[in-house]
Length: 435
Image (cartoon, rainbow, N blue to C red):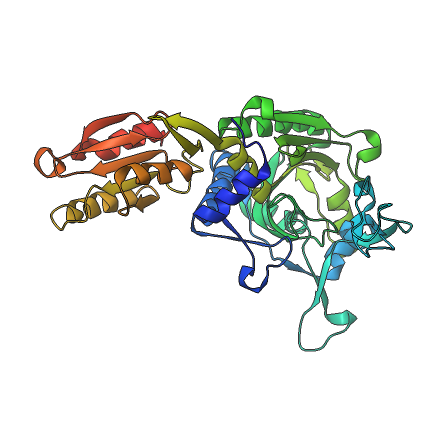
């Protein structure tokens, strides 16, 4: 059962150390969040799952990590300085600002008639700063609004050093920054976020088939990692929604508590980006096919996902409440690769006779998996705590373990327990976890 409302997951995230409001002791900073001990692990797992699928398990994609700060010339060529804006309106009564497409039925705290809006004007979403000791136009730089441009400007470098040829991809995971007018819905829309993007360069005639391939492949990725198919859909953009460079775009959407929202966009960017950077830099960004003696600028298909909102979707889809032994239970049914901890080691007692064995088992398992060591409170409460943070398996070390050299494995979803020899524990858990 997915979360009935966002507050259920937000409260769990704060209580258990997934996500905190940023600068909370100073009253917080709107739409900024800090990832706590569990959230940092889960967000890392989401990104690693993406890299595993998009890079590690393929032979036609390479990974780069481009700079966050960028020169104005890069974003002038990409069109961000002139086109990267939202229509902004102001309420003349309460002085709040909104995107024009989000002003229906807005309550005004100062007027019973509701907000009264100005005409719309363009609001550029780029964050600008200065590099060097002197401020001025010559020192202006920008925080990147997407990771894509770092892949386009490095196209020639990657082509030369990786020995790839179209179709091939350049992937990147990293921070992006957008001065959103109306951020909100927890970590769904923030001004600082992480993206998982692929620029897949293809011969122009193959663009449509690769676009179809990536739409299907990316949708299946979310299902494979635990989101029910009925909570996902692909929505193709209408012609009036398309970016000026796009020959076709589709969004993979998730059914959030507030409605359908975008997880990932898959776009046919044609050859717009490479041609723009080639023109502005006066460098050739093309591919020479020796087999056909043909020189061309590749087309690009771009699957681009937000790591933070993807993590939110996995949390919402995994959130469940049931009854175990006549007691209500909250459980996160996370895929094992996404859970902050794959295993928790639970010594039944803190006595010196038991703790060395428990620590030894934790050390063995921790060499391969992220392992919690939970020694506080009664064993039943510890099980509930591990269920609530999504730990797939608990390993209980009791006094019988000293005699029979066995431990109890307890499974999160079914709560089933069985006894396993310590010598075969790692093998058994790797079989159950699937890796």
